[in-house]
Image (cartoon, rainbow, N blue to C red):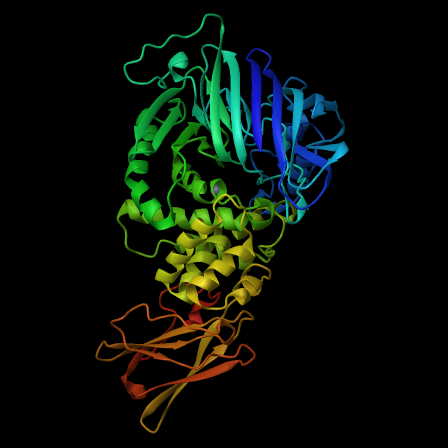
Length: 585
Ligand SMILES: [Zn+2]
């Protein structure tokens, strides 16, 4: 797919006109009689699905507050005509023939006069007009905190994804995105005083200047009140940009191929806080590439804008510097793997949160367990009684609270707990292999599990079924200990409905320790010892239908001072109190 867009922005009216040429390849084996586009800006109109759902969440109490997003609340309902957002389609042609279309709020449905045959290409030509909404959520103008004029995400009519599940005409109700891989040429004509950062690489830097021009080149801006910025991006699934006349623009080359850009205004954070992002990013980058895979683009841009932190291909919008690492790490998941985030938000937000915890521990030089936050987020979710399975569509969770905790925390726990099941070094190999094999291909949960199975030689379908498709929880306990013929027997009990392999560590009076490892039956495999220095006894698999399992050590009962299930804390056991038995003799 290839977009060529020419945009003419009026900074007085906050409206723009756009011409969009879209070369669309139907790479599927199916004949397409309709196509769908997203019209995200139409969500910012009173009574829209986003508005109505937000006000509905406002009726649900959550602790001391309400379940609605505090940025959205009932603000859409109160937008005036010059503050709403819209995208209006003026004309649409396919291969030069006018097509009829229907606007269904944030989705444009086009019934084609001739179907698109499998493995063939068509060209869509569209003319559209849009108004940039006052910033409510993610995109928009004049954010009151950052004072950034334009945060331009979800700003153009965007072709929906057609994949093995068919069309994904997902209305803009709350969150998360999915798009077609393609190339973009975006030419933005705007008031000469504005400075733009975004997805893609500026093609005419020496006509623009503003920190983009090549060293030693004299910038020659064309005459007139407006400048045309020409951006190009290849192999991305979206294009975002932001513009403000007061942006400070800094760059940092972090290796032979990659340059980081930073655009900020010292409004709600200092210049030093913003510029530290580049220092930290430069320091983290080799560790990130080694752990999660090679960044495939030449450029990445941190842009002050948006209303929180939000990821886009090759760039992020940050209302303040704090979320820079999280949003940058999205490049490896949202950006390069491009999961359908409506269905697999946890594979993006969860994996990104996991990576964020790991990289921030690296930056702090800390060797402690960095995932305490995501585990306690998951445990609170379980206690809240609001939990829904991770397989729930992102927009269909009953509460925003349950969505957030599930996708960010339970999704991050998924990876650290996978390390418990297969071993941390094997989990790390899985992450790299997954990235390598699925980059630019929209993997789903089963695709990840298959890579994990192949790399670990352990069956893991059960892990997906319990952790992702159910809300069943893990709880194992130490039931009883007794001595028999000079040996000690320990009975373990499975209380929770989700089965897991068990690491049981015994510590003795002389400070020595033993690991007792019981694989779970459905694994049809076992993890290797993670600590070579500790003796380890491997048992026959625990059948998940059986509630108890007895293990044995050659030591006497009175030699044992501590018995603990999973001292690594990686197994998300919802009641850890019964995991541990301290014996005082
Ligand atoms: Zn995120």
